[in-house]
Every structure is written in structure tokens, then in C-alpha cells.
Image (cartoon, rainbow, N blue to C red; front, side, top):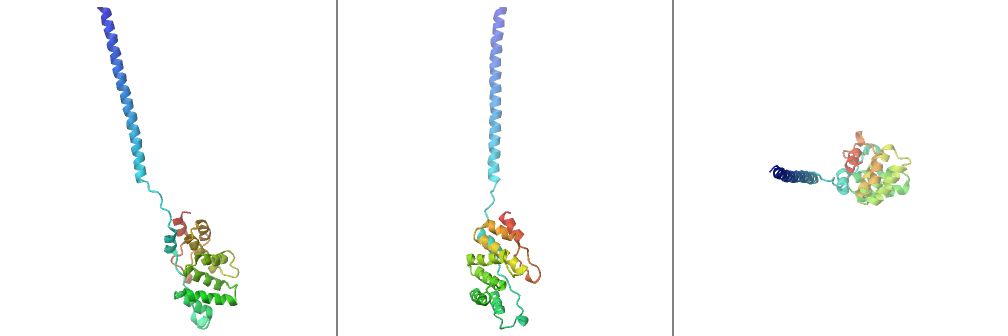
Length: 202
């Protein structure tokens, strides 16, 4: 009887071990499955919450910061018959085709005059002739000759904006980084190069 009892005990022990082994394997499998599902859930949540940075709309960025330059004209000192004074007033009034023609007439008498070249660039820019405006602004920004610092600075600003409009981000950044906001009587409200650079992503 003792032998039979021992054999029965061994069988029971074997059955018990097999049962608990299966339960352990099932529990480990369940844990692994739960961990995998949790990882997948985290990934899905991250993907749902993550919004990629919106690409910069260059046309909107240009429109947000571009504003025609406003000349300060002293009629008393410049005289009503001064063609350059008339051209600046004409530009201020938004008659860009006329200011363009007047600037070209002025340059016919003095082709190296930076003031006249700047008015030409402004008029071209306002008329949407961006490529021609870039050529004029660039010549003033990179080799202004007798131009003063204000014209050099303004040319860099408008040149940067024109490059934005032309989808040339690298050149836009280069010239905007050289631009300093104007103060005093020549203040331009929208002239914020650092802000534009930030929106572009430096």
C-alpha cells in the first residue's frame, strides 16, 4: 500500500506542478500583453496630441510686416518745385506708377544718387515688381556708396521682406539680421526684424 501511496503522491505532485506552471506562464503572458497594450496606448495618445509645427506662409508673413515707407517731407525747405520732393509726396499718396517714373527721371540726371535709387526700389516694391525691387534694394544694402545708414538699414529691411515673398528664406534671414528698428521721426511700426526672424524660425 505504501508504494501505491507514494506513486499516487508523485502523480498528484506532477499534476499540481504542471497546473501551477501553466498558471504562471499564463500570468506572465498576460503581464506581457498588458505592457504591450499600454505601450501602444501611450504611442497613440502621443500621436494624437502631437501637432507638427505649421509651415510658415510666406505671403501672409510678408503682408503682416510690409508697409509702404512714409517720407517726411519738409515743403518749406525743399520747395514746391523740387522734383525729388514732389516724387516723395507722390509716393506717400500711393501714386506709385508716378513716383516710379519720377525716380527714373531723377536717376537720369544723377544715376548714383542713393536717395533716388531708394525711391525707385520702394516704388517697384509697392507695385509688386519684387524681382526688380530686390535688385535695387540689394545694391543699396550691400554697396550703398554715399547712402546714409538709414537708407542702408531700410534697404536691408525691405530686402529681407522681398526675399520672404520670393520664398528665399536664407537670404531673408541674412538681411533681416542686419536690420535695426528705426526710432524717432523715421519710426516704422511694423519694422520688427527680430519678431520676423522668430516667426521664420532662426
